[in-house]
Image (tube, rainbow, N blue to C red; front, side, top):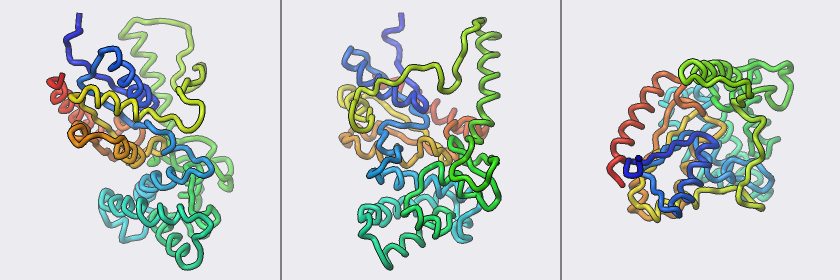
Length: 314
């Protein structure tokens, strides 16, 4: 008996993909949301899939590489002395400007022009110029995770690049595991099982898959190209112009980098009147924004304000 109550949808990680798709699907059934909260968002997979011929991820992951290098104190002294947000403003401009143009030139980028890009890319990533040159100016996630702290025989995390790990062999090309996942998963598993059994009284011997495994393959709704549900979200906005959207992003998230979702939101083709309904918030945290107590408090405050604002929008 809650049909007239405010209606909200929250998604995290792959849940953001589902939420965007569901919003577009349900509006066709006459079900409109007051608001949607997306945490660690992936809507257009072209922005995050390192495939041959797709240079977009290299551009959009760069600011997160910089944030990670800044956190681990691998940037030049002048950048380390700046606040993180100030450094990222500088890097974002270069990423969408000179770096994008350089990658677009492909093998035609040579001589002094190539050296200039190498110098700046090394400055913003903390990686050696020779390594960047051998990588053709393009660094995939796993290689960055392995290379940044190689001189210390350490790796950095994918879900949260503040975390460090150690591999069996420091000479490898990719990390053996994600140290952030290894740190987060056990307490999450224990807490969830304790909650559903103790608080909810649900007891079962069925396996609960915390992450992956036992789940059928996705039906992406597309056979060729990259999955993209941003158009479904745009459709929901167009047909329900009162809907509000909050997007929460972590600076140290190398699974769904913050700059990639900014790019996606900027390419949805929303009318100016609808863009006012979108608010984005950045946090000095990773994929699970809320594992940092200070950022958890900020997230709680931001979501509470969003819900109060959006509750009257239907």
